[in-house]
Length: 215
Image (cartoon, rainbow, N blue to C red; front, side):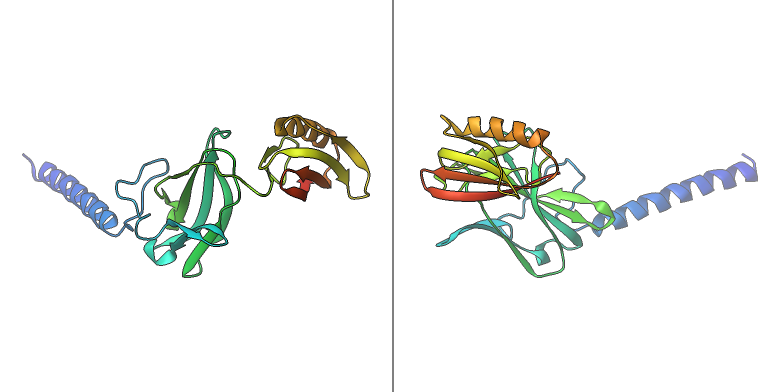
């Protein structure tokens, strides 16, 4: 074998060795929570940090940023029986030591998880926490802001009005089910101009006004 061929083989082997060593260094320096988008955690951190805390004033998800080295953004996500996939409820930039999210009332079987975005846009998810529906005192309307279609969860609605910022009543009724309110309000918002609206409801738990933003 000529000297030129020997030098070429040595160069190739040296290059492969350098690449493999670099991959090993990167792998050893990844945070424990790091996984690729869509992958599942083999070992979750929920028992150490992300967990449900039941308090006298409600239920909270709490977690510590120190458990997620290199994290730059946290997102609380939910997937209810009415959702096709997880959606983000709230997000926070990772610039403080601890975080908490107070759960809103829900009437559907729901799954919650924490999405963690790290440096270089690496993405990880906490273990999924499944919660059974409970009796809610307040209505929840989502998405809000909305382009028209909305979902409503919570206690039974006995009567309702949708009004604009000028106080004009756009729709009103005494529904037989909350789904009826969803359909009527969604249709009215869909054909209405962008802006603020108010859904005034009388429920089995009292009266409530929800501000809705149409975009």
